[in-house]
Structure formats: structure tokens, C-alpha cells
Amino acid sequence: MADSRKLNIMGIESSCDETSVAILSDQIVKANLISSQHFHKSYGGVVPELSSRAHLQMVKPLVDAALQKTNLQLKDIDLITATAGPGLIGALLVGLTFAKGLSYSMNKPFVAVNHIEGHIFSGFLPARRTNSLAGGMEQKPKFPMLVLVVSGGHTLLLFVESFTKIFFLGTTVDDAAGEAFDKVSKLLGFGYPGGPQIELSALKGNEQSIKFPVAELKDEYNFSFSGLKTSVLRFVQNNFPDRKIPETDLNNISASFQKALVDALVQKAKFALDNHKVKSLSLVGGVAANKKLRGEFNNLAEKFKVPCIIPSMEYCGDNAAMIALRGYQLYQEGIRDSLSVKPYPAIPENHFLRLN
Ligand code: KG4
Ligand code: ZN
Image (cartoon, rainbow, N blue to C red; front, top):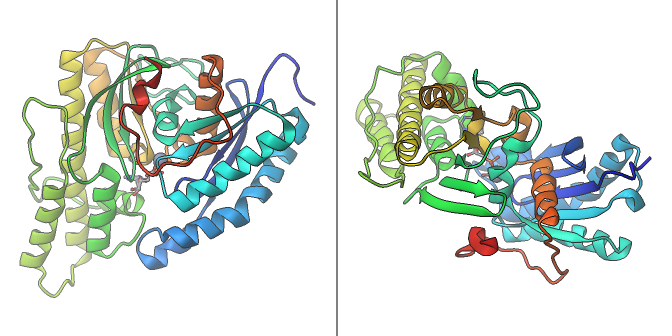
């Protein structure tokens, strides 16, 4: 039964290789179903055309399953939201068009969501807060907050003043953090997606064994990871010309690479905290699932005496709950999108600032 006091929000996410459908009752997640396209592994990366087809197969069954799980019918949904970008254009088209179809046929309002904004505010989803200052499940991030978005396609450092005021501090000048994990993983023969496999291997290695340099972009908030990736490549070429790397060395390379990348992320976040007074620090996106990074971020937050907000694992990778929540926040700000909204592959210039 629909709760008449609360809004039922449906979110649909299909920007890359996860089809996800969520139903929220206001800010409470009632269902967050995720279907991951594991078959891309055999290709070493996401194949866009195959991704679109898989979304097409999964979106309707997931919508049905989410309704069933929540004991709701389509007519009980008050707001439809979907990711409009950035992402793979063919993949985005599937979820976005399906959502627009629902909105049209049910005559319900529609809000198009920027996937990165979904990640940025994913710390507002219910999660166990990890550092001593963050409090329990109910503790929400406080504005202003410093947010580091680390995903497969993006690395962004942002000063977030409110739900509608997001200020850009820095980004990567080359590879994204997740992309660096994925490329080094491929190089080491672990395959795609790289983050979880490098993390597993790193657990068995010595992170002090190899000193991989990370480009230092002084006095700015930007990151650069392509040099780090190249130095791992050179190390492998020089020491293992036949590419046969014994397991101990593989683990040491993974651990040392992970340390170099995490240190670089933490260093920039520290630099931003030195210069901006904030009430919370948040780490979001697929790479935020990395335990070493989570731990280092907690330590950093403790040093600056601010609560550290990192979503639980379920909400780090791509998921529709964060899309529905972001759609709900925008809806509360009076935003309604027309059904002529088109998908966009990259973040439009000044998009985050559209509400300032
Ligand atoms: O946010 P996400 O699910 O998708 C994008 O929007 O890109 O992020 C996916 C990225 C991949 O590059 C994957 O290798 C990385 O997140 N990732 C991790 C871990 N789990 C996923 N990186 C490091 N450690 C992990 N445990
Ligand atoms: Zn993402």
C-alpha cells in the first residue's frame, strides 16, 4: 500500500554496465535492485553495444521485481527519475527512454539525474557511519562538505555548499582513479573490473616494496594518474620482460600501486581541507569501495575533526537508489524535467552550477 504522506520515487540507472531500479519512500530505500553485466569481463572492458542490449533485457524485469518487493503498483509511484548522463549513450537511452515512457503513460512527474550528482549525494543514503565523529545510521552529511568522487570515468574534488550549490575544485588531467585500477589490472593479467582484484592481491603484498611515483601537480586540486600507470608498466617491462610475474611480485606490485594512488587522493583531499572549512568529508563512487582508501579517508577526517561519510558498499558502485534520491532532492527544489530531455555522454559545461 502506498503511504499517502510519503512520496514513492522510482529511480532507473543504466549509464554503464549495471542496470538498476530502486524505489524510495521519501529518503528511505525500499528496493535497490542491481543487475551487473559480468559478461564484459571476457572482453577486458565494457562493450557499449552489448551493454545496451543487456539493459534492454533487464530494465522491465527489474521494474517489475522492485514493485513486487515493495508491494507497490505502478500507479503508486509519485515520481519517476532516471540517469540522463554522463555515460554510454546507447546504454543511457534504454533507462532514460523507459523512465520517460513510464512518466508519460502514468502521467507522473519526471526528473532527469546527472549520474555524478547521484554519486555526490550518495552519502545521504542510509549507511553505517564509520569514523568516531560521524555518528550512527541516522547521521547525515552536513554542509558545507568536501566530496571526492572516484569512479571508473571520473575523479572529482568538490566543495558542496547545499543540494544545489556544487563548486568544482579539481579533476584528473588524464586517467580517472578507477580507470587507473582497471588499466593496471589488465596489465597484471587480472582483467576487468580491476579495483576489486587489485585490492584482493594487494592484501597479500607489501605496499612498501616498490616506490611508484605519482605526478605532483603543486598548488592545485587536479590529479594525474597516467604517469603512475606508465611507471607500473615500465617496472613490469624491466623486471619481467616475458610478462611472467610470480604471485609474490604481483601482490607487491598491486599493494605498492594501490598505496601510491590512495596517497595521491588523500593528499589532494588534505590540501582541500587545509583551504576550506567544512562540516563533513565524503568519499563516493565505485573506488570508494576500496578498504585502504576508506581507512585513509577516515584517518584524514579524524585529523581535521570532521565526520567522514562513506556510503555502504551497496551504494558505492552504480545503483539506482542514489539516482532516485538525487531526483527526489531536485524535485524538492522544484525541478521538473520535460520528456524531451536527451541523454548526454559527458558532463555538460557548468552543469553542476545550473541551480546557482
Ligand atoms: O562508480 P562506478 O561503479 O562506475 C562508474 O560510474 O564508473 O565505478 C567503477 C570503478 C571501476 O573502475 C572499478 O575498478 C572501481 O570502480 N572499483 C574499485 C573497487 N571496486 C570497484 N577500485 C578500487 N577498489 C575497489 N574495491
Ligand atoms: Zn558511477
